[in-house]
Each structure stands twice: as structure tokens, then as C-alpha cells.
Length: 444
Ligand SMILES: Cc1ncc(COP(=O)(O)O)c(C=O)c1O
Image 1 (cartoon, helix red, strand yellow):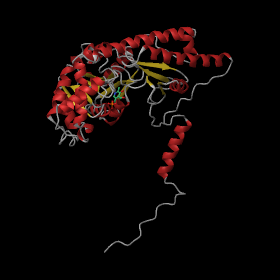
Image 2 (cartoon, rainbow, N blue to C red; image 1 turned 120 degrees about the vertical axis):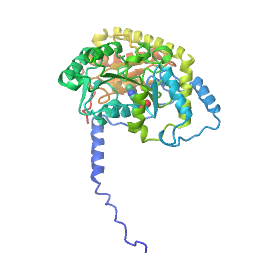
Image 3 (cartoon, rainbow, N blue to C red; image 1 turned 90 degrees about the vertical axis):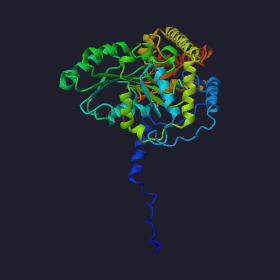
Image 4 (cartoon, helix red, strand yellow; image 1 turned 60 degrees about the vertical axis):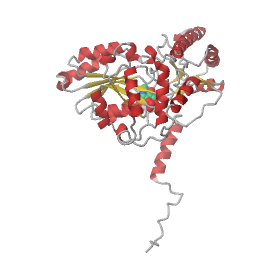
């Protein structure tokens, strides 16, 4: 017998649900704080000073050719994945790629993950055990924080000041002093750092971090995890990363290399011991409960690594480092025109790096990030304003990223736009105008 009862009528449109009200209010607050996020598409002809495509491989015929020949070499390739890697998503191709990538980076083992985000959430989410502690640089990526939040060590995480080894020592000493199990080597302390910090572009002083951890935790229960998202392809011999550059492969507990930046694909690999790899396969939820990358994705990773391994990407990395020097010196000259680095900084207009950054990421701090970013964008240069909570309060900036495919003319172009912008702001200041910083958002 069919159910002839009329379905309940929907709520009249004049009374929004409480969820609608909550979501609308949250977004309204964001608009008021100028923190409302929207998806944008960069104008096709704008010059890229923003993306993480550091080696400019994304549109490179080199990578496209390598990718297509990888596909042609496997004409019967499956387009789909088949499932979680634990069920039908695995393949000899994935296992071989994983092994060769780990070997390239001088690691015992590796585990491919669908993204760097998944990798960090899984690693930090499952490896620290009850009673362990995670000590983290204040600027580590959101994915590490998310992993820590989900982990059994969630209530036992301690931050140290960015790249400050004295503060790291203080924190570790404090942890050791208060916790007998840590002191006795029965509980572990994980230390989370990034090779190149994504928003500041500076490098971790890795050797010093290793020394501090070994000194304070001599029983071998200090485990360093290095996120090489931004250094993959950029630092180290053949682009192997910072850990290889420093020869610290055997002193680091785990490394993360992501493929969405210089490698111009997507996905990631966790480099670790075979034991940790097995543990992740058993306990990392983002590994277990998701469909694994399909063949075309794996082939793109293979193709991109073939360029690193063959040395074809080396001239790109070398060019990138050359451009870093050029931009640095151009910014110094620019600051000199406006009375020097300190004068600009004092007015909250612009802070340029005082040392040559070790990476292609330049953080140009300013109290007026959106104004500066918009000015550059209108002139055809794609840079973005980065504001809290992505970066700490009071450190709003534009993030200028260099790429192997940028050239001197483009660097000259963006610097002269920054100069025009500075000139107009200085004129306003000289006229006695009270220029207030763009509003930093409160944390929501
Ligand atoms: C330092 C760092 N770690 C991890 C990730 C996440 O990597 P993915 O983009 O592959 O998810 C990012 C991405 O922005 C990152 O900057």
C-alpha cells in the first residue's frame, strides 16, 4: 500500500534555520574584518610571482613530454585508482615509484600519500603515543597542527619560537625536567620543523636543531620530523632537499616531500624507517580510508622525478637561486632610495629581507598588504596579500615567490611597481595624512 501521507512542508522561507543564521553570521563577520575568502582565477596574462611552481615545470614542455612518454610507455594504464591503497588501489607501479623515490632521497623507506596535508595529518595523528610530547616551531603548517590535534599527544604539544634554538632548548629542557618518562627515555618527544618555512621563506637551522635535540634528550627519544614541502627540487644535490644537503639523512626520524610545488604534480611521500611505514599503513587514517592516487597522477610524479634524477632540473634550480640574488639586491637598492631598510620599516610601509633568503619565497612585511598586492596585480604582477590567521598578528605581508621561468625584466617590473606604490604612500605621509594599518583580523 503506497504511503499517501503528504510529506512535511518545508519551513517558510521567511524563517531561516539556525544553521543558516550561524553560517551567515560567521561569513558576515569575515566580511566586516576584511577576511572573507573567495576563490579567484589569476588573469591568464599576469606574471607569476605567487605560485609554488618554483621550477616553472607546470607549463614546461620538459615535464609535459616526460609525462606523455610515461603514459605511452604504459598504454593499457588504468585511468581510475580502484580504491584505497589497502584494497584495490595499490600496484607494482606505485610500489616501484615509492621505493625509487625513497632511494633518491637517501631514505630507507617511503610511503606515498595523496597530499602533503594528508601525510602530515596521518603522521602526526597516529605516530605520537599517549604520554609522548610534540614540540613544534610556531610557524609549522596547518596540516601539522591538525595532525597534532587529532593525536594521542593532543594535550601535550608545546610550541617554540620560530627558528630559535635557544627557545627549543628551553622547551625541551622544561619537558624533560617535568616528565620522568621523557627523562628516562620511555616517552618520545617529536620535534616538528620545516626545511623552508612557507610564509617566511627562511630555512630551519637544521644542524643546530639536531644538536640541541641530541644534547637535551641523549637517550635517543627525541625524533625530528622535517617538512620539505618547499625545498623539494629547490635545495640539495639534484633537488633532494635540505636534509640531504646537510647530510643528516640518518639523524632525522621522518621527512615529508610534497609534489604539488616544485614537482608540479600533486601528492607526497613520507620518508621514514620500514617500521614507521608499516605503522602508518596500519594506523594512518588518511592512508587507510581514502581512494589512492590513480595511475596518471603516479605517472606525473614519476615524470617529474625523472627530471630531477637526470639532472635536467638542475639548471632550473640554479637559475632560481640566481634570481633570488637579483631580487634581493634590487630590493636593497629600492629601500636605500627611501632612506634605508629601517626607515621604511619604521613607517610600517615595507620590510625587505636583510639577508639573502635561502629560498625563492620573499616575505615583504607591510601594514598595507592588500593595497600593495592590488597595486601590483593591477600592473599585471600576481602577488598575494597574506594576513592573519595564516600568519601571526602584526606580520601581514605580500609573499613574493620567484620561479625559474621569471626573468630580470619581470623582477625590474615588479620592483618599479613597488617603488611607485611606496612613492605615493610616502607622499601621503609627508602631507601629514594619518595612515592607519589595514585592519588585522581577530582570530575566529
Ligand atoms: C609546509 C607545508 N606542508 C604541507 C603542505 C600540504 O601539502 P599539499 O599541498 O600537498 O597538501 C603544504 C602546502 O601548502 C605546506 O606548505
